[in-house]
Amino acid sequence: MAADGNSLLEDKAGDKAEDKAADKAADKAADKAADNAEDKAADKAEDKAADKVADKAADKAYVDYSCVAFTDLLASKAPVPGGGGASSLVGAVGIALGSMVGSLTIGKKKYAGVQDDIVALMAEAESLRSDLLTLVGRDAEVFEPLAKAYKLPGDTEEQRAIKDSVMEDALVAACLVPLEIMEKCCRAIEVTAGFADKGSALAISDAGAAAVLCRAALEGASLNVFINTKAMKDRERAASFNKKAESMLEKYVPMAEDIFARVRVKVG
Amino acid sequence: MAADGNSLLEDKAGDKAEDKAADKAADKAADKAADNAEDKAADKAEDKAADKVADKAADKAYVDYSCVAFTDLLASKAPVPGGGGASSLVGAVGIALGSMVGSLTIGKKKYAGVQDDIVALMAEAESLRSDLLTLVGRDAEVFEPLAKAYKLPGDTEEQRAIKDSVMEDALVAACLVPLEIMEKCCRAIEVTAGFADKGSALAISDAGAAAVLCRAALEGASLNVFINTKAMKDRERAASFNKKAESMLEKYVPMAEDIFARVRVKVG
Image (tube, rainbow over all chains, first blue to last red; front, side, top):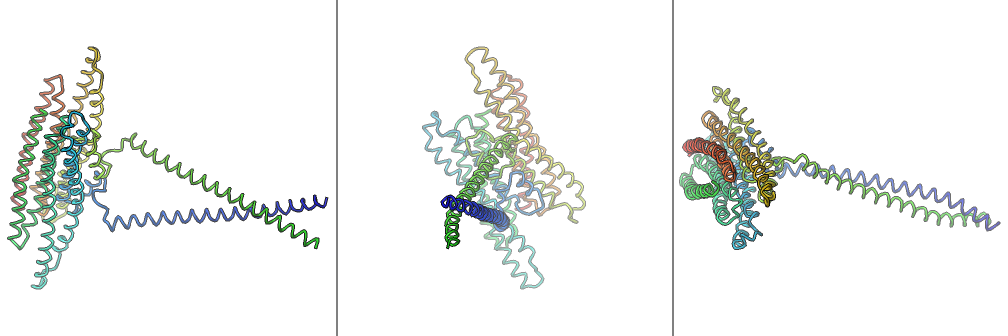
């Protein structure tokens, strides 16, 4: 019985200790869980706050807005995005249609002979699309300093001299971005010509649409060059920018028109 | 010592039991935590799946995708969105630029005399933008039955008769939507002419960009009419659709060109 007594004692003590230990462990686990939950909630809140800060800091790219929201912004009296950014987006939409023609052509037996050409065209189209989407934001970036420069005081001669210099720099930047958009659109039109010639006949109407959209983007962006060169003091530079823009229009508008006309004949 | 012996025993037993209980409790807590984590993961996966299902069920409108995501979809081999939807989106972007000219004009003393006209133009521009954004989705909707009709069997005479009839209906629907996109773009060009004439001189380049974008949307959508009428059996109806599309191009492409030319003179 001694042994029994001992084991009884042991059992009782064990039960008590077990209960106590279980309570402790459960408490600890609960505390830990609560801590974890708190940490997680705090982390989430922090992440959310950081996201918002990042959005504002990085000025959430306009092209990351939904298509509807982008047109809302465009329609508002906010000065950006404006004609330049809208044109760049349309250029991206246009060349994306070019890529679609490529996507519908590769891997098809009928077009095995032009597969390598199509792959090369698609690589360039995708790179142009990425550039044009980036230029939507860049166009907005160069507008801000220009808007600020217009508001600088011009009461004294010194103020006017400063304003002129700041304005001129801002105008140059606000010309260079649409000129770059135009260059990308020119190349997009050339690439689209390739898709129209070599791509799947089933997607020929998409190649034609790509051409007219890229052409419109080219023309739309050109107006931002012309409106900004008009205000420039350095008339030589203004003339040089205008000439660049005009020569792109002269060469690539007819090229896009030609693609559209050829597609119309094929589909009509 | 008996007491000591007992307490020693108790202590030992207690320690053992405590260890055991702690292990058990820890195991339980760990199991619970694991269960919770699993549940959470399962919930997340379920939510994600539900989101996808909801997206599909509600057919998350293409225009609710980000601009980048829309161009991704466009560039893929997915047949929709295609040239028609892209054109409709570009028309919406174009007329949004028109609205922007209006937004920058109303409330300005200098333009008080045309305030009522601008307000009326803006109301129509906003309605056109909404219609064109809706037509992006409608263009995709009418493509699906057409794609299905093309795949119908045509082995027996009966099958061919059914296929022809289903095809014809699908082709008609796939013509009516781009014709509607074109009509909206024509009206958008007229409204843009109003903005170019009466809107703030500061936003004149945006009016010009609006014109070229709406014109491209008009031309892009026309190709979807022509490619679908080409396949129609009812040649009288095909001719009537083609005539409609052609007469819109004949009248409104020059109108848009004229706006662009006038704006170029003003900004250049």
